[in-house]
Length: 196
Image (tube, rainbow, N blue to C red; front, side, top):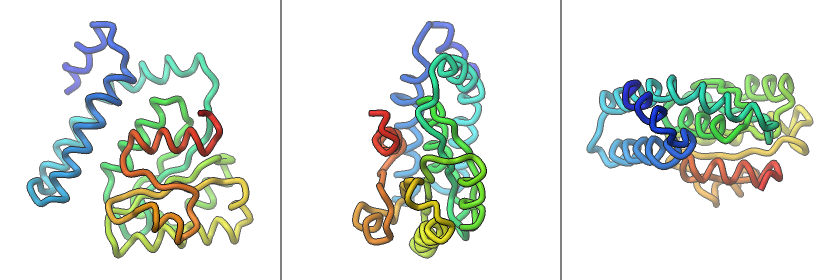
């Protein structure tokens, strides 16, 4: 994957377009196949490693290009407490970075308090909450409640995603937005921060 990414850069291709039009759809397809039971954990891990390898080559070029423009916003993102699913969240984080956002990826199994403290620390514009399990999606609501209790909810927007989430769920728990996939997440976050 590293070699292919390096070859792509040698052709003067736009690395952001490569991420948006090749890598993101490929990872979304892997996620779909996993959800349908055609792929299993080993395939997810292999795809994730290939994505990381490609981004280790493309990422620095994207960052260098974006440093010539000011960032449209600061994002804190993570998979909620009790959930260890990484690929979808990591893909969204990479796409947001590629779009020029400053992204603080808290990883997986993140407690509500950690989202709140990081949002305060970095003066976040948006908090992104991922959950892939119906049993953990309620923790998206717990983070929103914690942000409200901390007095941050009026200035920090919240976007939710993950297989069990939906626009209706986002509305029910008081989130500002929902995104079905990484590409949509970038568009939605741009809208939330007024960059579009």
